Length: 193
Image 1: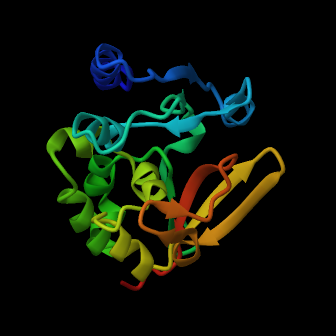
Image 2: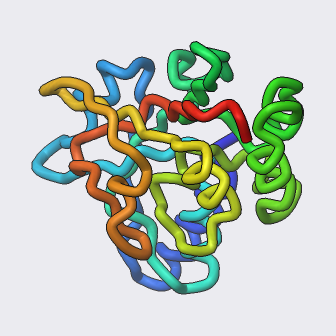
């Protein structure tokens, strides 16, 4: 589960005298919005947590001060064909993308990119939502998502909005998403690739 690799990193940070992240678990999109800020401290939503663990283990970045687990919010999962396109829930793993017949047949570049993401463990636990929201220039799925005209559907307490990925990504590791917004899903509208 999510907490197993984070537990190891938290112990190392505690031994090194670095702050240890506090955590909470959301049970739904609404509860996620409610626990995103507690006691004045913004909480980072985490599903697979693979980028956080790798970054903390390599000393690139400490864990966020506070996190909220979104890995059990069922409405953030699923792969659905919509009007000739595709909707990928934020919690869809890279393995799920590779295994999906419609993606392999009609969005081959995305299936191929997901098949080479990191290690087997990363593909099993890492999510397309985390991949997109971490905005790493090295992400394998970014190119295909841009080619397919993907957009990010974001939600906060004040409402929902869709943002094309070319507008979402503002720089390496940076997005135009408000810290209070949660990624719900991605829409891939171009089914002809």
